[in-house]
Image (cartoon, rainbow, N blue to C red; front, side, top):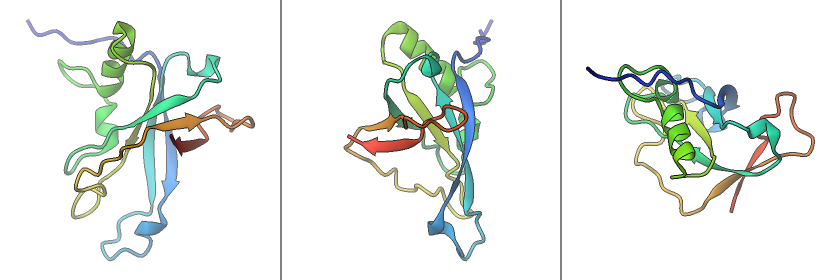
Length: 138
């Protein structure tokens, strides 16, 4: 019998809105305002530590929200991250799930790479939800 991971994610998911000037007046009429789901790990609010940022770029025709929702007989990405943290295979991270969908292709087509680690820096004057306030390449 297949098993299903019924455990809810230990952290929480917040949704932030990002405005893109790069998409302004695009010929396809794609929206310039995008929603990004952000997974904050368990214990995030109890510390002032900086966290590495992992960006989950989805495949063609996908959306980041597809990786945080319920999945039949498999873990979603926040559940996978929780399991890896709990096992010691990785440390706590913040995970961003951008909406990469455009009319013709994903906004990040070509699987862009970076050789830098990005850490979320906390602003001493936190926003009203205590969410991350900036990202800084390291």
